[in-house]
Image 1 (tube, helix red, strand yellow):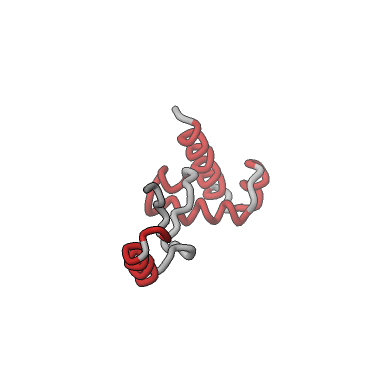
Image 2: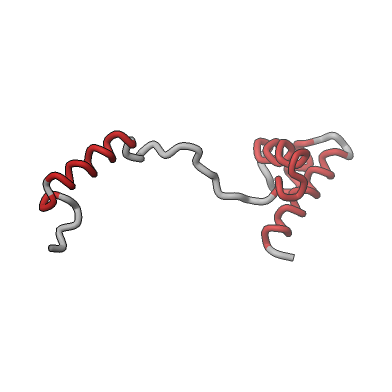
Length: 91
């Protein structure tokens, strides 16, 4: 079993422990987990199962620092008009 799967299994055990006495605080204390983390696990499990309990890197939906396409086109056209000023000066 990989480390990610072991961690997901531990989180599943936490969810199951909180389900029996319905005491989230006690279950979190027993597993040394904050309540807000518990509720994140609880939200992730129903839809995705064990995969929802694994750690995943966040995926950005937008790229705020990306140059707008219009600016890219203008720069490309400008570099064709004046080649010495283009980024590639390997002549």
